Length: 167
Image 1 (cartoon, rainbow, N blue to C red):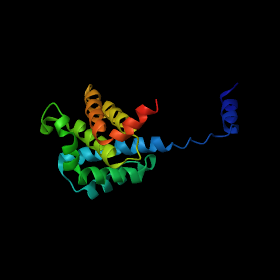
Image 2 (image 1 turned 180 degrees about the vertical axis):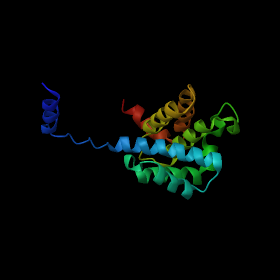
Image 3 (image 1 turned 45 degrees about the vertical axis):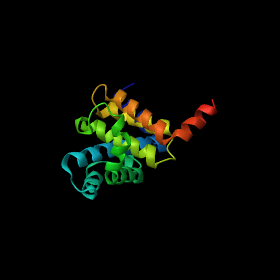
Image 4 (image 1 turned 90 degrees about the horizontal axis):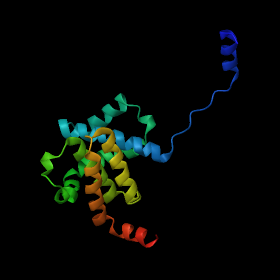
């Protein structure tokens, strides 16, 4: 078959529509963007609304759940101190010695565990672990997993007990 024949044959085939991302994929992308935005807030202390506006311009937020991104960014930054208080005593080192990515990841995971009871605790932990794998140091995902698992035992006690009872 000549190159002309191949080209015309390719044109005849209908183009497949791109598969629409699932709700969980949109939420995962929102968490990833939120991590980057929270990290930026931690590092330069810029106003959250400026960071949010910058992300809207610099990133394709159409690939994520924008409302969830906004909620995570606004909620985590507004409640950072109370979130830190939730997990600080579970740490093996002072909060100030945490890697900034680990800190941002723990804050997002803690926010979801404490504030978003509609998100199953296992999803909140697993999503935080995946973020730590993508953005954190080589073993930080294990650390994040351990801290959030212990926190879940405290803040999601009933959900965990119900899950175990149903096994």
